[in-house]
Length: 215
Image 1 (cartoon, rainbow, N blue to C red):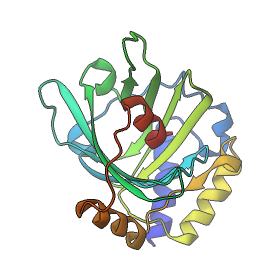
Image 2: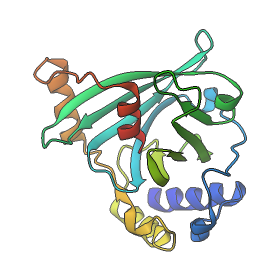
Image 3: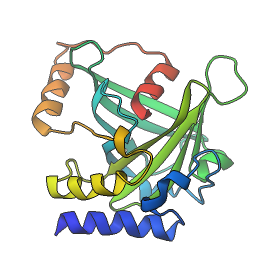
């Protein structure tokens, strides 16, 4: 039943926001205009369920959204396992965004250095805050948009994955999509190592972290 609910929600929220999953090839992240980002309903823990294009350099990504704005900023708390060099390094990182007109509409601009123009832009495409959120991102460092699916569920069951894969196969992202690692055994083991100081936290630059985590 949970699998069917997730699929129905995915299709329903896409339809209500004017986006048909069966015709994603017509969707352009650059032109998409989100409506609003309600912190109170989005508050809490979100697990990355999948992403396109496939970037296996990280696993166990989860994002905690605060329940309010703090001193004009919204601070997201990211946790993930960095696997880019074959090892498993747990990373915990807060990320602040100014709560401006763009952020209140679900558009988050990432700046780097002294640049006055955003290097990466992320947008909320569709969301049912109790269950699922789909975002897209684009920038000058990569040629096409990315898509990420976040859910309130830590793991998506296999029957649901099959149905989603069939839907995504009809889009331009189908062949590039991958499911994210969210196994409690693997994710919690790395987190325990971090807590006891066995694995040090890497001092990534802001752009490097966001690009890897969200893309």
